[in-house]
Length: 409
Image (cartoon, rainbow, N blue to C red):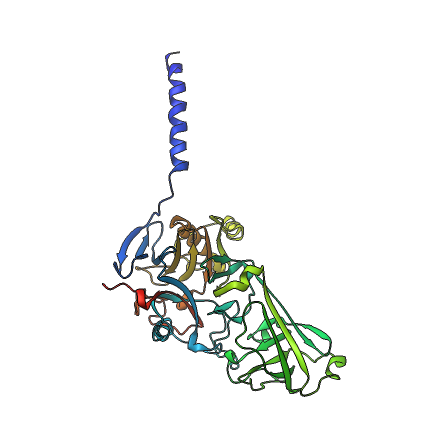
């Protein structure tokens, strides 16, 4: 039959089309509108109207080769038990002599309500200017930067030991609540004036510590007092070692005021001890350029998909979101507005991961969302927070510029 002579040509065309489709770089499907153009070389800021569903996102991309630009993490109100707006946190940072904040978004998860004095407590890793303020919990959802500019992403864990009277005690947490399951916690002056703990545990007040705490940390200390069960004052040159339950009787019998001991803290893998800035979120979104298996599995279980619908399955619910992603060339900070029909209904974590991949991210983590999602550029709130105003948050992440090398418009 005559058509048979066209079969090789048809096969050739099919293979050519397939090759082109698989080799062409993925282009983001939404519409980009440039914002704050010329703010600084190496910084690209834009509004991204995602055309697959009704969601408005704000994106900042930092060129990793731009030597004047850096990533930073910042604790709210300069202490663990403190809350502050993203804009205010960024403003305080810019008042220092060395760097100015260009872009700021909200950070990780923790206690937003008072919770018996623990409003502001973080639940995951926070390293700021080399100081380890809280330890990793969800190690997969941690991001860090070394002094050499190397980007790090989970898994990461803390290994810590307190040695007292020849007893080696595992230290589980730094500056976190007993109620979150921590059996042994070290409270530093970063948490405030006292531990805010209840009276059901056991505490040892330490002085003579080398502060601040950082990676590969070792320090001797002296026992100042011990035995009082809760809410001990934290010395400026020390810390409080707090236990959720009673201390081992054999160890308690050997304690005395003036006794010396030692603390050793390290992060694993060892490269994390070189991190000078780090933030912990909740859930890895992108790994090696693909949506993580957990999100893929949740997406497959979704029987029906309704754009903009909020559901009890929080990763698949359409909500305001904040995330951090990167590849070899750039860092990406992204905020999705939500809960505002007619403008932006929000986005699921699975969809956010696909958007980040479209924008070039090969790795990404989820940060706090909901009413906390805030996108600040050059001191101005650019997005529309779902609570209709800025919410006080626990920490934030920045793109900063060296003040000596900042661009003059």
